[in-house]
Length: 114
Length: 114
Image (cartoon, rainbow over all chains, first blue to last red; front, side, top):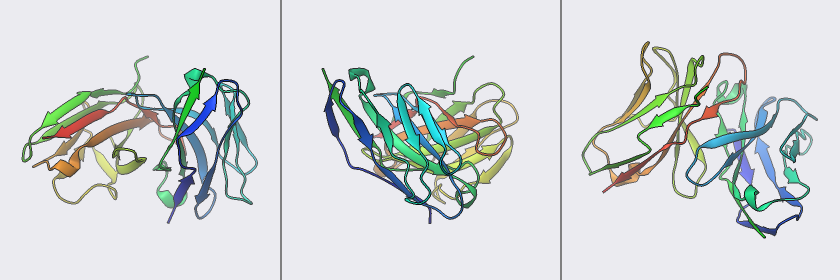
């Protein structure tokens, strides 16, 4: 079946450090890929998305490239801030999940210290 | 432009009682999704509804759980005869019609079973 695997957290960084959160997926066909962010006590917010191979999604300094050859969608940011501390979820949707039914990874908690 | 509204934010029930969770989608959104998040885990799809129709309920337990999205009013997720294992955060998301339209999440209802 379809699945998403994320690196385990927490990821602990100092402010202005470079961030990478790995995400790989298993799916039949061509899923759309998403990164969502969840701040404490809140729902998920869409951070960025990519709908086809080689697309790069970007938002608020975060970016991720849809790599079909490695089935990956790693999240990166060049310089993290304390306010980026949150849980990040990689997700996919597509024909085999049932259109729009999101399949989530387990989430990666990011802790950024001043 | 209000986002997805869920209420209550917190709900406490004793074993055997009923829990009703409400979700008002964003204006203009006709598709509603319910997800469950267990502690320290990612979100798991439960059910996908359009107005007056259940489209996909493959993620919802066969017993005690039901969902509806009536022509008028919010979507309701109903859990009968709750058990301790039902304790979780329940998130609703809404979207407009169309392939892979982004889902917008509410802040969730945190259900605690005593």
